[in-house]
Length: 94
Image 1 (cartoon, one colour):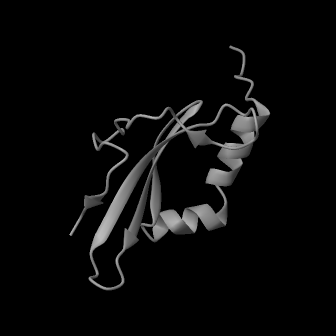
Image 2 (cartoon, one colour; image 1 turned 90 degrees about the vertical axis):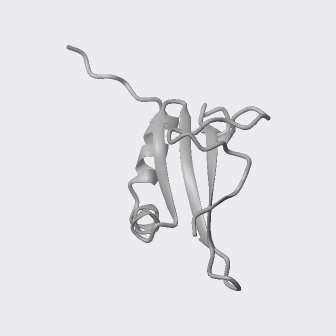
């Protein structure tokens, strides 16, 4: 069986997702990859309000087609993440 040949854009993205800098953010619960279904990338970014201590997360659907070497927001309408949250709105976690 032949091996899948990855595009340069996909190889670059996968290399970035495996850097120490990115993985340390995952370990610190600052972000996570929900799903990578090339060229679509679903990520969740989490932050804390310094005044109230409340934790918020935001889901993003990015399209990484490699035309300019960057991932761009996919479409202009909210998308459904792999966990069922709608991107485009904040979700309070606590």
